[in-house]
Image (cartoon, rainbow, N blue to C red; front, top):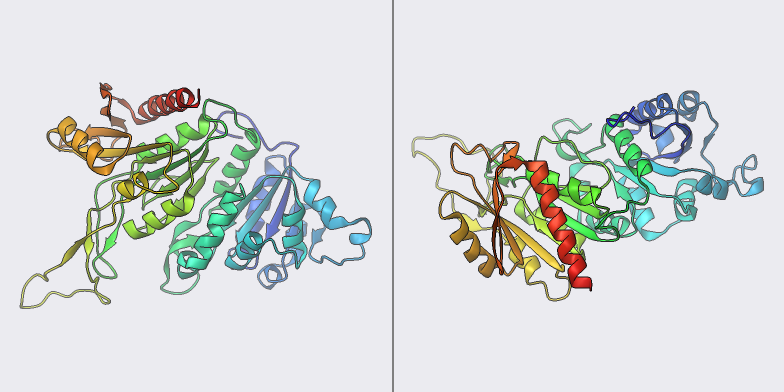
Length: 413
């Protein structure tokens, strides 16, 4: 049952492709969760997936024959891979390994899973899972950008401990219930309609972590709540949304692509990969500085006192996109978290960064805005200042997105 009291999965047909990663064991629970909500689940397993779980176990939970061979004479007599690709409402890939994502991005069709993915005309949702170093690798980031451009939805990966001892970071497959929520959202509104229908919106949210050594970092108090609220509002208005988030303790909003990063450099790289978009909203509180040379080992106390940290300036993500020569969005919106002279500083930032709007707020001690659920903002544009009263952050986000929709509609006339 969904949070809105409806069961969007009853009677739906899900084709689950299980890739060859240790997270494959979670797919057994995913099958159970989908079935208990009334969905029929067919399963395709790659050869590598069978090294982690068996077709017998997946088939027993799904209550269906498990498909493993592109050239199986029992199923291919009537071009079974085409039937699998078309006779479904949604294709889910969980886990989507680095190799499987690469083959999807390249359009390969060298086994049953990749052939089905190439042949399907149905929506596809993937749940990536891999080692953090593999997730951060430039090749994986290129492949991720390509599958997103191909309108494939992504859920996760999450941050946490890996199967490898002592390995942590972003790469854990989203939990089964998170994937179920993404499936429900995708099937509840497969073709969203709204004032931003057909538009692409990029949102950044949360803080960035700039490493000092392997255990310490420079950060700020941003919770990501306002950015996540804007992403939800844009998706509700029908936009295709990419949310690039720093480290936060918030659940991924359904119905959009969520990309998780830590540092300002990582955020800039993902933002540039997400371009072109119609609107970019930079709500993230990006650290202005980073340590020039983070320690390879933990810095230890010694008789010489506190270590001296040489700070260097981080890349300016807002200004970079606002001045992009070929892929500048139609509307670039920045945020200004200030503790004094809020409107004056926001106006100066608007000119300095070259963006179209600045959403400014007072985050002084005692306001409760940084990390809280409410906000009070000033929308600063070249035409003036519109001050909005204290309100829930989701209401602020809805109001901002409504203003975005009106502005884009007027520009299109």
